[in-house]
Image (cartoon, rainbow, N blue to C red; front, side):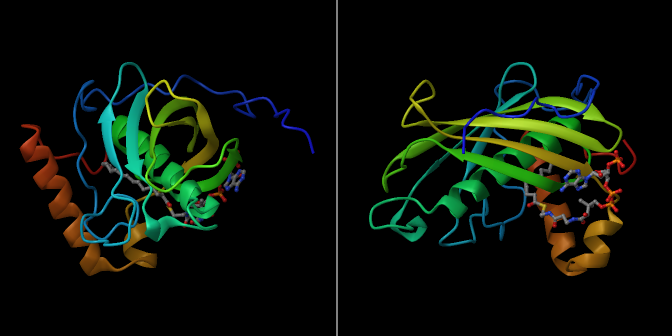
Length: 197
Ligand SMILES: CCCCCCCCCCCCCCCC(=O)SCCNC(=O)CCNC(=O)[C@H](O)C(C)(C)COP(=O)(O)OP(=O)(O)OC[C@H]1O[C@@H](n2cnc3c(N)ncnc32)[C@H](O)[C@@H]1OP(=O)(O)O
């Protein structure tokens, strides 16, 4: 099987213009939900991924691979790396577009092994939007922002209504998420999001 990839985005798109109230470059984004496996500080074995807004339509994320993330001895599990990209890409979509969206499709290219103890620096970017479909991609650099690319990913996020989470998820935990979001905005001196942006 070759690494030659299909055109991306796979359909004609409009530029994915960040929301006028999107956090500005340099903003540390904080945890979006304390129990989130990707970023939550209450998820002990989680990835504890941290993200910062970059220039343009980019979010920079990073996480350090621990023994809890192993597949083969001393090496990160590929599924966990995919999880990190899901989180990093979702963070770019949620924070820059300020629209609730879920992952519809996520593909990963694993190019180099990622050892325990290494830090992956993930640069995620918005590639375009077509109706409710938001296309994003990311590269994960080993141990430095300009380190060798170990993993790349592409994903489609689909914009959903808030009822997606209240209908299918845990409404009580959803309140916790809303509180966390408010706290993050207050810490950044910003106002709350609009439900209908
Ligand atoms: C608000 C402020 C935020 C503030 C700041 C928050 C920060 C926030 C950080 C979050 C960071 C966490 C990031 C983790 C994010 C997850 O991990 S989300 C969890 C994993 N994903 C899921 O559970 C989704 C499960 N799937 C579903 O619920 C439904 O299939 C979907 C994706 C909502 C789509 O269903 P639907 O709404 O009925 O829409 P549907 O017509 O089927 O699809 C819409 C379009 O997408 C296309 N499509 C859908 N799936 C696919 C696919 N797999 N392949 C190709 N095309 C597809 C369809 O063909 C269709 O295209 P068009 O016909 O419009 O051209």
